[in-house]
Length: 102
Image 1: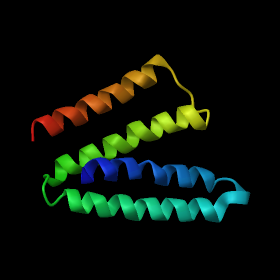
Image 2 (image 1 turned 180 degrees about the horizontal axis):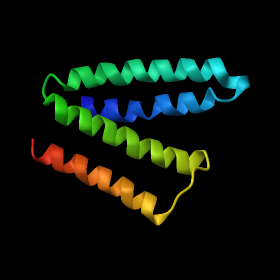
Image 3 (image 1 turned 180 degrees about the vertical axis):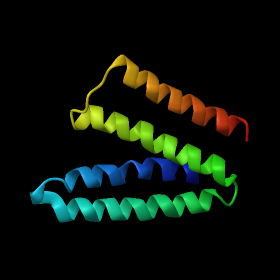
Image 4 (image 1 turned 30 degrees about the vertical axis):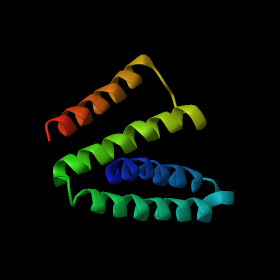
């Protein structure tokens, strides 16, 4: 549970950095990024008490990468293509394999 929450919170800091690109929301975006970084890191720390470090880190970054990709496509107009979706599916498959091998 901690690891899933850490991964989901990992999505928030790239969103904050994206918001920080606009002068009108620069400081709010930086604040959002910092809060999500700290919260995500805290829950990753909690998860690592029970999950090997390498597995926890891979799952954490995988959730963050896949989630950030989806948020980018759905809310920020990031490009999407079949190949990009296949890439994300490969990330998810790799993360699932690591977790199942734990």
